[in-house]
Image (cartoon, rainbow, N blue to C red; front, side):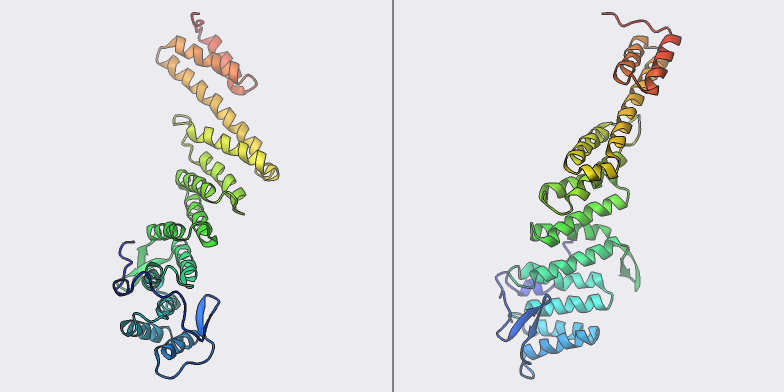
Length: 316
């Protein structure tokens, strides 16, 4: 989202003030005055905006915040006003517009106490985007913003590595791909999540989902079996690390199904070579099925077809 750079970014230095003026304190992710400031001062204007937002006067807050920024671009309360502006846009239902002031805060005040609250707000906006929220176009909310959401969640992780909100952002990306049926992408994102947050409370979920995503990305007998082999390795990890979870999802039954698919694939290869007139190659794969999957229906089928088709032994 390279477009998320507003005029404030050109006015504020990256080394800006990191705390509010004396007489203010941080409450629930917002700076508020301990004592009502004097009338007409920049601090009093901010205090009024806080109250107006509480009263639901979001349009008034947006108007006043924009004007305040023009005249107080070096004031210590600049991060607070940017946060208020974004919160007012969210209140009006304009989540996409809220990203402009939030991004100004994050880009220009990385040491501010409001940095993490702004990240958390962007996380919730990203979540709304992935849940179907659309951007307005010609006064109609019609433009999908999925890619913007993914980029925002990636940036949250880059901006505050190891934090709780970064962890949630990584998991949200993986969960989105999983729910959207993009299993190869989901498997990659769960792997990345486990690399970045190996001790996360969601590690068990990520391990299981990664195995399921790998299974889901398998396209069929005629395609690459690598996802199945990877899924088998992931299931082994689940069985070892989370035995109860493995039992709940019937991990061993899934592993057995993968085993069966491998035998079925070799049987189809044998049939392919027989149809192509390559009897020695067909015989090799028929005997491979019989040797490697002896107790399966595929082995019984291979014995029957091998006998019926009078395929010669492979020369030794």
